[in-house]
Image 1 (tube, rainbow, N blue to C red):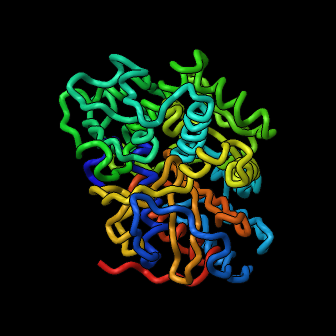
Image 2: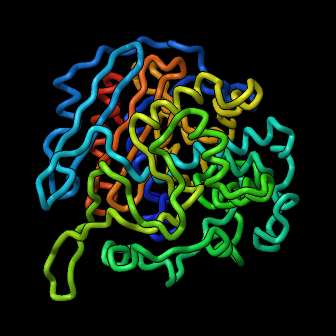
Length: 416
């Protein structure tokens, strides 16, 4: 995990980075780019392996464990279907993990945000090449160079990562468990960049940075005159019938049922170790990482997105275009598969496995919840997974690695 990423550790700006690294860390290099951007590969460029039920069960097996209490995995597409759960969803009752559980999707929220911004670009209400400061005067700290809207979406803005603040805690499970209902506004988060240097000149590199999507969320609200939640409902969830996907109100910590409980292992002042139920928590990451959904809804959303139901061709191309720039100390794109180059587009990321299969998608984390949604470009295989980790240090990575290997074929660990 990149230590320069904005703390606290439970922020999706950092936590989902560890999981993205886990999925990408089991890959080898694709062909190098020769142009200014890498377009999507041709559909079905490599054959998908068959699904092995025993391997899939093993990928999420062995739960509950000390660091992960439960897991679910859903695989769909014409190349095969499989679904399963493991562990428990409630430590008190011993009830299993609901297959259709509501989950806190963390940074998968960014895919919804990017989709709306791209829709606004298609409507000629936003120009991706114009500075965001032109649309949001006074929102970004003074002294920053012009940041293009598109650079927010593909993480090439170079914006400061922010700095830890006492109000945001010390990054420990103990602080979060005690302060999980505390809330912060998008502007409070953006203001953490004040006085901090740019990471690099805009457009010259890529670094995963959640600050980009707090700004993008405010841009959606400024341009439309509606709340971000309203735009998600009117543009995506209502048209697609995603009845279990929502942007919670800032003061609503609830997670609809059915759901698996999220827990954190904390140490009390007297040295005793116990688990705190953090299922209810503030959804303050908002357009950057505060949304709630279900595996079925995420599957339907990504299917519609990849099929072009939400974006016209020009903007659809942006969704599958990786900028040809270096990766700058990012919590993603640090593997042999990426050769220190960018791997993220305007909303999602690209991962290529050792057998040549390329998948696109996104991961996300909130305390007690880690999830991901990935698919081949032709949608022949789609996966959604969710884990319930009990810590904030990313030890659930090994489960993500198993899921990736079982879902997309044999993979080779990257070498340093």
